[in-house]
Length: 386
Ligand SMILES: Nc1ncnc2c1ncn2[C@@H]1O[C@H](COP(=O)(O)OP(=O)(O)OP(=O)(O)O)[C@@H](O)[C@H]1O
Image 1 (cartoon, rainbow, N blue to C red):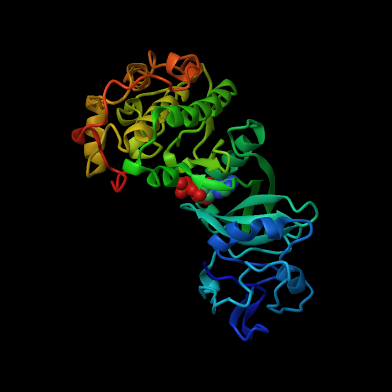
Image 2 (image 1 turned 120 degrees about the vertical axis):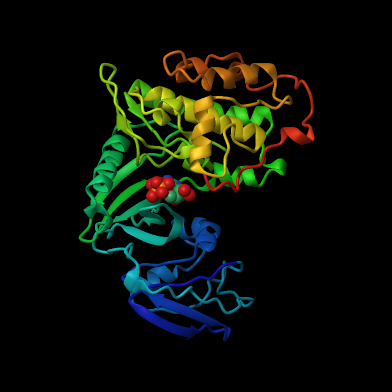
């Protein structure tokens, strides 16, 4: 179990009644618990009658103690609690230091994710106790016009979207130091991490199909609204506890027009379509479809079709377009992968047609031609080029 702590301006160390050392660190009227404990305890925290006699509430009243609720034997203040010390990060350089006046309606907990420019924190709406995720961009990073443009576009696009397989936008909050995007909290696991838990880092066709179908369903919806995600990859697919798919991170998303082709070099190298690498003008949707094919390949094989130790090598292979589909993949699935990884964006299958493909209709239930052989397993998850 990871450390637990309460935060509100400054840091104090306290002994709980059980004489166990608890370190309490105060930031501004907020409570911070570590990533793991946040997930472990957030049901209690979020419940209207929290089992955990919320140190948060005590904290808000300025009365901080580490006492445990009688009904919370599993919580870290229990008799078995060991000294749990909050990682004492230097808050002075924490650009994602939350502003409680801006987030007055939320209790903000600890980090649930980190991206290149944003930190994502778990929060609960104080009145409804509804859990949410708050993506925090420091305004310093938004001084870069390109980043600012992307973030504003991310917000604009998220506002337009309402689909079960896409994370829901709740509100944006413009703080003095940060910009906050409040959105649906997807309690679960990133698809990439889910894959890593599997033997050989791959899924069977039925499970892969169920996940892939939902991804493509979200994409089809976006494409129907003239929106492209442009950064489809394992890391940007979150699974909830019921294994429902939610697409996240619309930081590269954009609106496209059927009349106007555009060119922009964006996405993650392993997932980039040949038309991007060849610097051709392109419409958005085929690029998402290509990336979804790379992702499907990864789900089924534990590897990527175009690999290399350097970006250049990956690009060279994508340009050549040569890849092997392992023999244990069923014929209908192989056919679908080939239709998706069609180097020509004009003839490449669309998201709409993927959903009508026999492999999807049959939910991946096809006899396998052969069992995996040694050489069929490609493991590139440690590849720097992801
Ligand atoms: N709504 C959410 N619910 C749960 N976890 C989330 C949510 N949104 C983001 N995360 C977590 O936070 C991480 C970072 O989020 P996100 O990818 O949106 O940030 P980013 O800065 O845009 O990332 P990148 O550097 O890839 O562009 C994700 O990988 C995911 O683990």
